[in-house]
Image 1 (cartoon, rainbow, N blue to C red):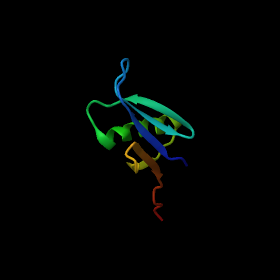
Image 2: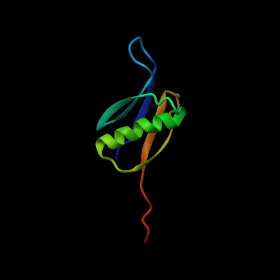
Image 3: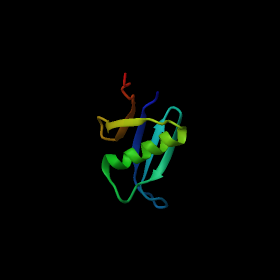
Image 4: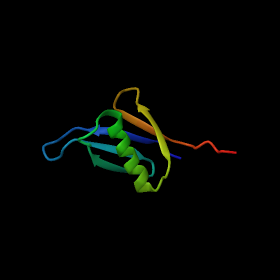
Length: 81
């Protein structure tokens, strides 16, 4: 299993604000969602990467110590025995 790291990319002269989600298996960049902000926006990017890679899991996330982005790790469901 791999963690997903997200990073905010500020607007440039040709592109609006974006969020890049990266894992060892690949990456995806999305436009910053206009209707949400903060960690929720980063969660959207992390989920977009998980969907792209076919990872059907729930993720738990938090900010990185240097406040440059967020990290999301897969959560294993507790088996019901």
